[in-house]
Structure formats: C-alpha cells, structure tokens
Image 1 (spheres, rainbow, N blue to C red):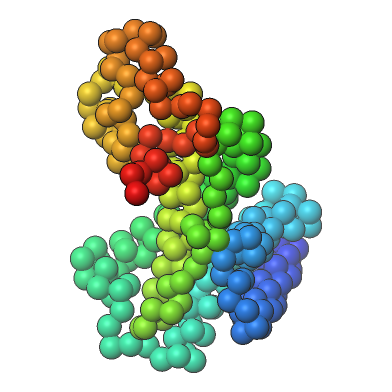
Image 2: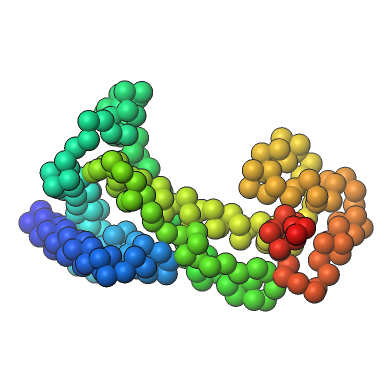
Length: 248
C-alpha cells in the first residue's frame, strides 16, 4: 500500500509540474492547443502516466497512475474554482438538475475509459492513414484544423465545466477527422450500398455519399462503373462529396 501511494504521489506531482509548464508554454504561444503540439500535451495527461506507472510497479503501478489522474482532476477543479470564482450557475449544475447531481457525476466519470479508444483513433490517424493516403492517393489533412482546443476561451467555463468541455473539444475534433479519413477509404475501395436499408439510412450521417454508391443488387459491373466514373486518376481519390469535387 505504501508503494502504491508513493507511486501515485510521484505521478500526481509530475502531472502538476507538467500542468504548470504547459500553462507557461501557452502564455508564450497558443500553438500548444493545436496538433501536433496538442498530441504531446494529451499524451502527458493520458497514456504517459500509465506507462510510467507500469515501469514503476507493473499493473499495480498503472492503477496508481489512474488514481493519481482522478485525484488530479478533482484537485484541478477545486483550485480552478478557488482562484477564478464560481459562477452563479454552471453547466454541471444544469445537467445535475436534469439527471440528479450524483447520476450526472457518475455518468461523466463513466466516459473516461473511452479515452483509451480516442488515443487509439488518434494514433491510427497519425501512423496508419498517412502511408495509406500516399499509396492510394487519398487526400491528406492538416490536423491542427481538426484536433485543437478552444473552449477555454468561452466565458464562464470553470472547474469541471472547463475540464469536461476540453475533453469533448479534443474528442470531437479527432473523431471528426477520423470519420473524414474513413469516408475516403470506404468510397474508394467499397462504393457499394448495403442491402439493409436501415443501415444505409444510419450510415448517411458519416457517409453522406452513400446514395451515390452502386446499388446493392446491381452486380459487380455496376460497382466498377460507379468507381471508374468517380475516380479518373487525375486528382486525389477523395470521397464523393469531398470539397475538392464541389462545383465552384
């Protein structure tokens, strides 16, 4: 138990030192809240503590890192409110009036394991998509236009409101970028509608060009026709509704 608490203290101290350094870096340049610098910032506060914990004491060390991270969240929220003052009303309070304070708080905490999935998605965007895009001549993207933080500039976000809005800010940007990349991949390699019309309707949100794909019952000749009509090899192999295919 002593080792667990000591490791948690080391990691918690590291997180707060990192937080102070990040605040100083932000005072110098706002680039820290945009990819690729933001990727390093997110790593410092997500998976790097897990790696440090594992190095210190295996899987028990990972648990100590998680404990330190959760403790750090509550300390941050307390200090942010203490120094900046608490508004008359907050998003957290409004959500609590709908769900109940305890249920709302537990629901927020229940979203934190998804961080693992979001980190994996971001790594896929950084490590997998670029070589695929080069080989298949797919469009590439400026990550900083998608993966960034800006909600700290919104007036009145204090403590937990600020922390969770940052989380959503990062998550929605990287998820949107991943969806955009997947649109190119799906449209290029499999431009065929699904036989399940419910699936076609549901997929339209993330794949708005699904209506332009080959009908599900048309046969391979139609799929090839649709493919060759859309991809001529003279420009990037972008999805059917990509901005570079819109009429000026």
